[in-house]
Length: 117
Image (cartoon, rainbow, N blue to C red; front, side, top):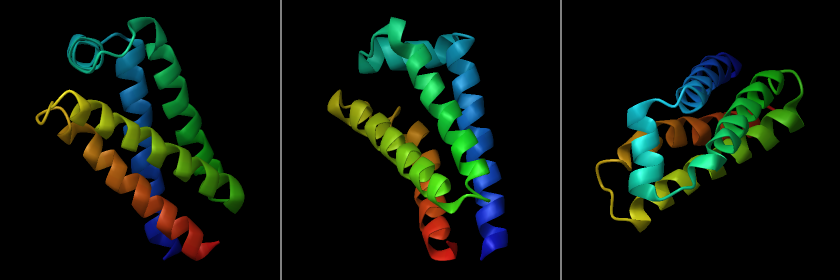
């Protein structure tokens, strides 16, 4: 099971960092969705990116320090739950699919990290 944890952790870390980079580079499609559709304040987008990067670092380091990995996986899970809720709140059924994949990955990493701790 630890191999599955490592693979999913690396995948989730890559997805999270990629998402953060798109936010920091102000990718037009990402900013349009977050600011225009969901209504999140543009000036706070760097905070979202920082949370994703911190979560990615936490789950990777958490492969060696289980409590940190669990905490980071919980944080990423909550982050992506918040993203799903944000899209559902404005009835953005198309945009809600974007955070679903990392949400499922976050849940999988959390479960595997708890089971292998």
